[in-house]
Image 1: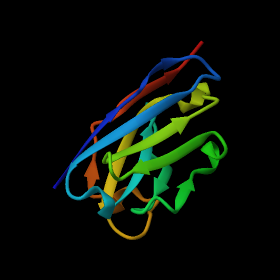
Image 2: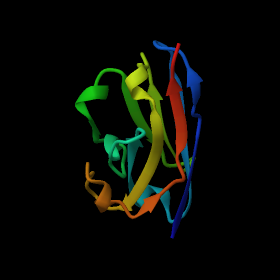
Image 3: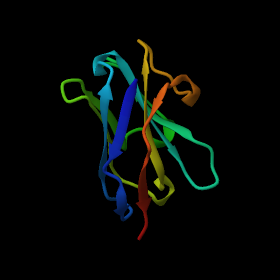
Image 4: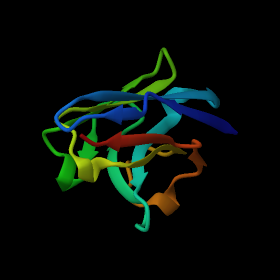
Length: 124
């Protein structure tokens, strides 16, 4: 079993930056591929970024490429999502997810473990 806790969300202005953290407990962290997803009001949950268990492979949704960076610190058992140049349309609840897999998936139904989410609001 894996327990995930996100932190780092908040209210920021357009153009600002945030770094989300996802602390894992339970299973050995270096066996886990990690993903970040988001869900805005009235919309389906969507993939934002994913990282392999080793941290060597990273994937991003087109709408965040060049602005967001995913990383993973296996020693700290923490995954991060650095978000720069935030836009109002980035407003959502952001969730981290984990799966014991050598590959990285963009599909939410392929992740076994989920955090409770952290709210990110971008508004002037």
